[in-house]
Length: 249
Image (cartoon, rainbow, N blue to C red; front, side, top):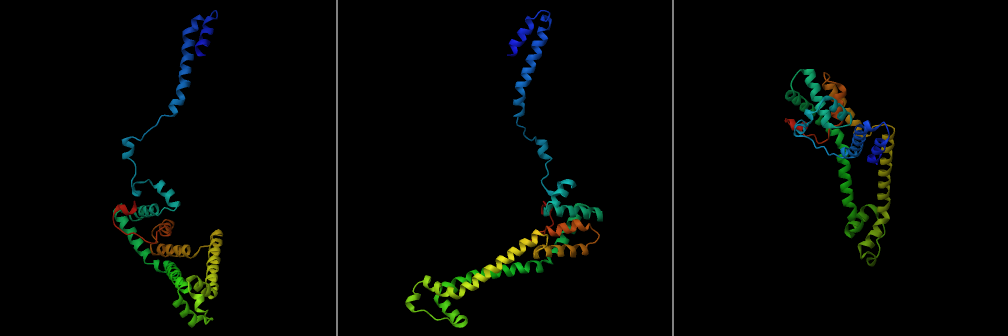
């Protein structure tokens, strides 16, 4: 089509002198149009120089990137941001500031007892209750012992207690109210917690994190309060302490 258009223009009187320029321009236009989709599909790989400049640890990131990551809830970013705040306030280099932050983390770990105590009690109660409930329902000697001391229900005939299904049907008469009530209590507690979160009320764990953050901020008032509180509130319960830069990476 481009060649036919160029030939028609060339045949017109008075336009023969424009034949090379018009034909060449239209040909170049056709080439550029056909080459543009190909240029969009070119794969670009990172160069070796770019890879060598890539940050591999949090202390290699710029402050603006650390700020965005810290506000998103990254503990490592909050830790590195606190290290830089210590450098700014105390006028020390990174290794010395890192040691100060690890002392803060150690002080923060000392206040973990009140925070994780309800969780430990809940874990222990759940594990023990789950294990004990099985023999209390299906194991005949355990069921008879529990009935004799706590329930005093009539014991069925021996022929009605020959299988663990029959034993469970008998013990379920007093186990069902207990297990049903416990399940309903857990359901209402979970529902209450979800409602608290929906209206921005702090459950126990969040409240204790805020308490620990306020305590540590009061202990180190010379540093930025918001940076220090974010460091505490995002810290994991199993804090890993160390003195190497990899601890912040």
